[in-house]
Length: 166
Image (cartoon, rainbow, N blue to C red; front, top):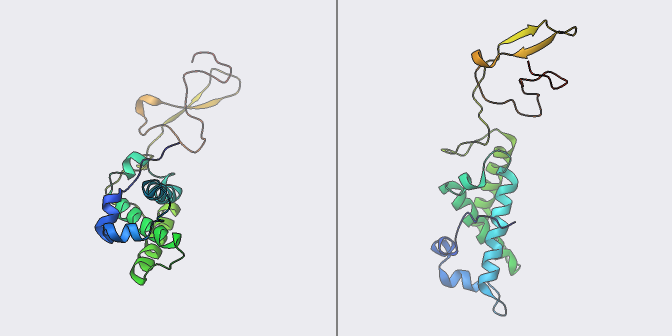
């Protein structure tokens, strides 16, 4: 599956310069393939933390995600030649990774981005259906608010347990 990259080579070059990027790439192989692979690796790392809460197409619109990706790319390029990241890059990487952990844990949101699920409260109004021996509690759609239930909870349907219309 091809990932939608969250940054471009040009954005990495605005931080490192073209010469800085080329110095971190191997001279004996396809440089474009290496930089593309590094950008894809950084994108996958961000997706690892954010995928459960955000859609990748939405993540691609965030400036914060772009600069997080750029910082990770620079860090990975430095590691390719077994060079340590300079102090400021290492600090930025640690800061971004900590923020990504907070996002994954649900303690932090990316400003301005919609999450995958509607987190607004919903109200369900229920009635007991006495037409059957076994009384079944059903949600009354006309006077309930909110979207479909998530996390594997059973959603109200217009059929009973054996498939008959209610």
